[in-house]
Image (cartoon, rainbow, N blue to C red; front, side):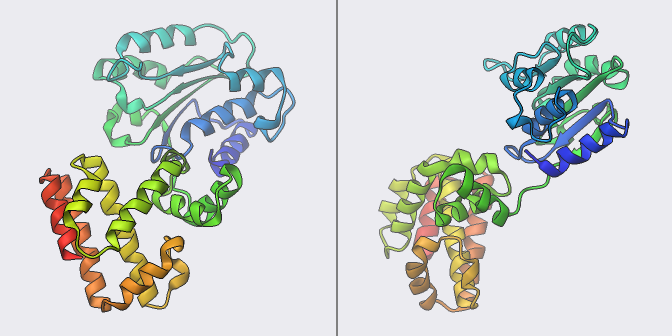
Length: 311
C-alpha cells in the first residue's frame, strides 16, 4: 500500500474533492489494489480511524474480508485471457443500485488493461457519469494499453517504485528477513514490494547456486545445465550475474557500502581484484547485451554459453 497516495486521496475526500474515477498506474506488486481497498475503508470507516488494518468496525472488516455489499471488484476470471463485455455489463447493473451500507460506493477494476475493446467501450458512459456517491478505480501496470477514451475519463495516479532502502527496511520488519536478505530482495524487487515478496527464499537459494558457478572458473557446461533453457530462468540468472558485476565495480571504485550481495562480498572482492575497472565495465556491458539478445529471441543456450565463456 502507498501511504502517501492514500493520505492525499483521503484529504481530497475530506475536502469534498474526491474524483469519481481514478486510474492507478504503476509496476505490478507496487500496492495499487491495496491502496484502493484502504481508500474505500478510510472513506467508509464507522470510527474515522487512520489505520483501517487495525480497525474492527463493521465496514472496515467487511471490506477487508471481501463481503461488503457496496464494494465491487472486477477482474479477469482465472480461466480467461481478459475482462469481457458481459462482466462489465454486470458491474454496471450493480452500480445502478443504491448503496446498502456505504457512505460512498466503490468499484475497483484490477488490471484494466485486460479489457477487450467491447468491454472498454461499454464502460465509457459509466466512467464519465457514474451514479452519485460512487468512486471507480481502475488499476494497471501498462496504462498505454488502455483505450485513450478510458484514460481520458479518469484522473491518473502514478505509483512510483519504492526506494531499495525503504523496501529493505519494510521487508526486514514485516517478513522476518535478515538485513542481508532484505537488501538483496529489495534490489531485485525493482521498486515493487509485491515482486520482492514473490521472489522469496526460493530465489535466494537459486541466487546462491548461480553465484557458486559464477565464481568457479570455467565449467560452461555446468552453468548452462544449472540455468536450463527456459527463457525466464535465463533472464533471472543473467540478472543475478549483472548485479554481482555491478557490486564488483562498486568495490573497485571504493563504494563498497553500495554492494547488494553482501553475503558474497569476499568472493566478489577477489573477482574485482583480478579485473581492471575497464574490464569490469566491459563485462557489465556484455551481460546487458546478452539480456537484450534474449529479448530478441536468440537461442538461450547460445546466450548463456557466450556469457559463461567471456567471464
